[in-house]
Amino acid sequence: MNHIDGLHINAALFFSDRVSSHNRIRLQSGIEDISSALPQQLLTPHTWTYTFSAKEKDTETGYSYFGSRYYSSDLSIWLSVDPMAGKYPGLSPYTYCADNPVRCMDPNGESFGNPPYRDVTITIGGTPNGSRYQARTYPENNGKQYSVPIYSLTVTGTNSKGENISRTWDVLRFMPYLNQNPQSSGYKQVTGSTPIMSGLSDERHSTIRCYNPNYKVHNSQTPENGGFVIYGNFMIHDGPDNADNTGWGAAGCMEVMGDEGFMELKTFIFDLSGSQNPNTEQGLLDFVSSGKLYINIEQSERPPVEPVN
Image (cartoon, rainbow, N blue to C red):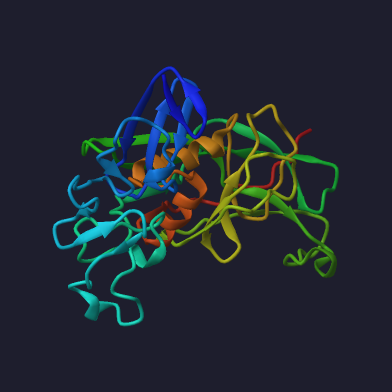
C-alpha cells in the first residue's frame, strides 16, 4: 500500500508527458497532478528518479541533468548560468522557463519556448448541404421565423502520427438580421421592417489569432461558451443542438450546430494542435495566439429571406 499526501491507494503509476512540466500519478480513482509538489512532499517509500521536468534525477547529486546544465527541483532554478543568456537580457540566467513552466518548456537547458504546434485549418463551405433551419430575426425579434440553409464546417489537420484527420459539423452561415433601434442594441441599423440576411459571403483565407473563452451566445441560453474570432465582431461559436431546436438568431457569426457540437469542435482543434496543456481552454488560447489556426471561407451567394408560412 502506497501513501501519497496521506491518501491510501491500491496502485499508482507515475508518468510524464515529456514535453511540458507536468508529471502525474495515475490512481485507480483517476489522475492526480503532482507537478507542483516538491520531492520531499511525496510520502512514499519509493524514490522517484523522474521529477518535475521529465528528466532523470542524478542519485548522487540530487539534481536533474538536462544536457547543458543541472537543475534543482527543490529550488526550481538552474545551478549554472544559461549558455544562451544573451538572448534573454531581461531574465535571470538561473530561472527555469522564465518562471512559466506550465506554458513553456526547456528540453536541454539552453533555450525555452512554447511547445511545437501543428497546423489546423477550418473550412466553411460555400454550398448549402441540403438541410435547413428555422431561425428568428436578431437582435430584434419580430416574432416570425425564417427558413435558412445549413452549411458545412470542416476542421482538418494531422495527428501525432502524421496522419491526416478531418471532421465536419453543420453550421449556420447566414441568418435573418433586423435592427431598427441601433442606439439600444449597438448593432448596425436596418431601414424598414424587412430583415436582411447577415453573414460573410466573400471568399476569405486568413489566420485566426484570437479565441475568447468567456464569450456567451446572446440570443439563446447555452453552457457551451467561447468563440473563435474570424475578424472584427464575426466569430465562430455555439449554435442550436439540432434543426428542431428552432428560434436561434445571429448577426453574422457562424453558429456550430449539434448536441455539444461546439464543445466537440473545440476539443477536436485542441487535440489536432498538439498542445500539451492540461487545461483545454488555456491550451486553445496559447495555440490560437501562436498563429497556427487557419480559416478558409468559400465564396457563397447570399440566400434570400424566406419567411416560414
